[in-house]
Length: 163
Image 1 (spheres, one colour):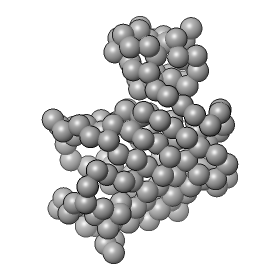
Image 2 (image 1 turned 60 degrees about the horizontal axis):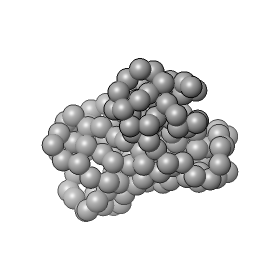
Image 3 (image 1 turned 180 degrees about the vertical axis):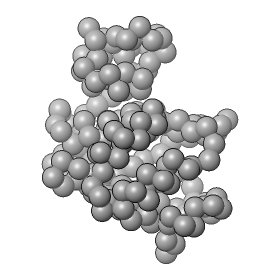
Image 4 (image 1 turned 135 degrees about the vertical axis):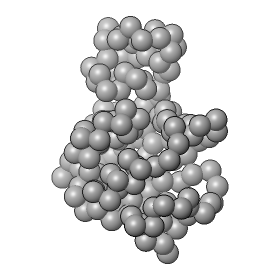
């Protein structure tokens, strides 16, 4: 059985899990890991799944289409806030290093969602969480929680405000 979301097949699927068992995929690509999903099927859960999958794939058109034009992105550990889809898009496009995301758990309801994910940056692997707010079928707010507080890397001052 093939995954009904081809974008998600690189990081896991949201259907039967037959195509996302370790080492077997519905698309013929080995190494896809199983992702656990909770809270039943709903549009907002799928929105979060597509958010992570398109971000991982660097499919900027699909990723940006999931966001409200006035989306707010916050990183409490570095005290950074980005307002607006265009600035948030540039922030991710310009983020340094070879980073990758793999969702572990996705939960969402009518108004909010959360994803627990593994992230890889060069040789470092860790876990992080992102919390989402939704309105009118779009993501209106994203708050990322990384493993520990840190000072932001230089070069993104033109996109963020510090608090």
